[in-house]
Image (cartoon, rainbow, N blue to C red):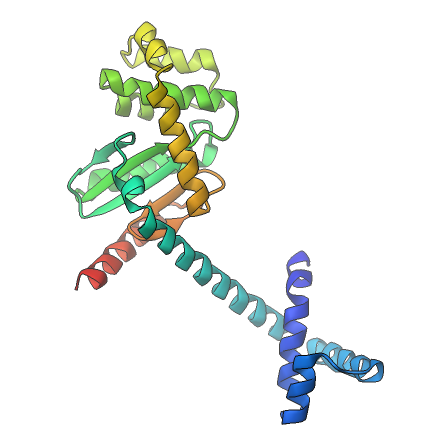
Amino acid sequence: MNKLLTYLPSISLLIILLILPINSLAQERVASDQFNEIEKRAIEEIVRDYIIEHPEVLLESISLMEQRQQELRQAQAEKAIRENADEIFNAPTSFVGGNVDGNITIVEFFDYNCGYCKQGFPGMMNIINTDKNIRLVLKEYPVLGPESIVAARAAIASRKQNKYMAFHTALMKAKGKLSEQRIFDIAKDTGINIKKLKDDMQSPEVDATIERNHALTELLGIDGTPGYVIGNILVPGFIPEEGLKAVVFQARANKETVTN
């Protein structure tokens, strides 16, 4: 119902344009909104009757508007990706996994306390392990509270001990909300030196990495986790494994089209 109310003014205008006599005078008056009160009431009655008789018009109009809005968002995202490609795909502060020379890159913005990120993790790793031509870039985007920030800082700092992927995997597989103590317990179980980790977490480089990732999400229009950039395609939300495969396929096709 709320969606209908949102689109109703535009839909009503669309219907008016369809059902009013198409002559120059009518077009001028619609454009200038110069109907008198009697005419307005008559038009409202026509619109009401038309909607009642043809309710499918509402659904068709909403579907078309949503499609156009999605196309606009994707065009804006593609522009943002082009303008920030080096920071998105090649930032030295981001971990790179999979095939570092792969022909398509999946960039994931994630939070270690995000249930959807954890839900999507097995499918993501299945794709990386099956498709040997994918490059994976991981960007910490802690938005779910102080513990998420601790987890992100610890993960970034773990790179100093060459333990990032093992630690990342363990954090993603951990059930439930991560407390600060649990984060360090998982780090210890992963073979990480906790004293060194805590020291490295205070590095300005860690702050800069998180700040850069947050800045990128604003440019891309990502306001939650997970969020993905796959080639030139933005996916601002959870996507199951089969959907992810489909986007990878499309991104490769887009890349070939541009290259050719």
